Structures are given as C-alpha cells and as structure tokens.
Length: 163
Image (cartoon, rainbow, N blue to C red; front, top):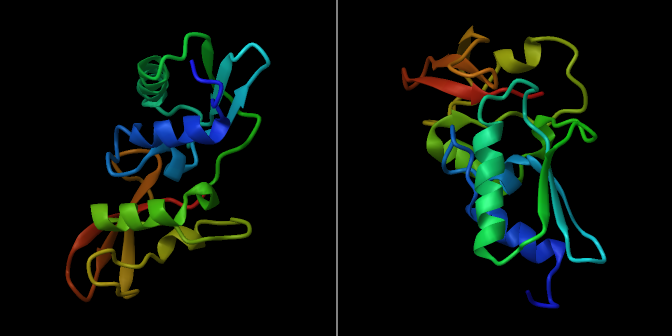
C-alpha cells in the first residue's frame, strides 16, 4: 500500500460506488459517506449514514464500498453504518442534485428546517422546469421519494424528499 494514502484519495475511489436505487448518484454525492479515517496503522474506517434508518440498500452499499477498498489493496478496513451524523437532504452535492434531475427525479430543495409536509408539496418538474406541479402522494416507491404531477408538460415524476 502506498504511503500516499489519504482520506481524499479513498473518497475519490468511492465515486464509483453508486446508490443501488439511483445508479447515477454516487454515495459521495448523496452524502451517505460521512467520514473516512486512516489510523496510524493504515487501517481505514469508512462511516456511512443511511438516508433512512430502515434503508434496505445499506448492506449492498456497504459491500460495494468494501469491494472498492479491496480492489485498491486496502487490507485493514471497517465500513461502519453510523448515526453519529444525521443524514439530511442538504448533504446531497450540487453534482448529485444535477444527477437526480437528469435521472428524472426532482432534487429536494435546500432548507434550514423542515417543520411540516409543505416543503414536499411543491416540487420543480425535472422534465420542463415548471413549478406548476401537484404532489399526488408523499409515499413513493421508496421511503425517500414522493410522487408528483406536472400540470404543464403532463408528466408524472418523483421527488427525492427533503429531510
């Protein structure tokens, strides 16, 4: 293993690890990789915070991160699911927001504090950019998505919920 090992380098390797439900979005851009630490013995610890406590994809994501570490010759590592940092949708990078939109999912708005469901009722259509949309249900195909309809281009779309 190279003496040049750094948390930045490891995070760059992890760009290839995509969210299994949204394969255009890396775990880095989703904000799920919350820390990378290298101790004095070169043991690597990667901490991941799920978008939801019951996220069914966490085991797959952890395995994918482990595979990348092994591919790069990291022998001593731990990939931890951690709730030390609470995930929220503001952790999605700008690159991630663009990837969500290109995938057909309305990215969540940046926010200071969510106090009620109003913030998910209004979503910008990822197809035409219109804000003339209606939320059809806060319950999408996964816990992190809601269903919407655009009154301008007449397309249904999902929004990645702001949390």
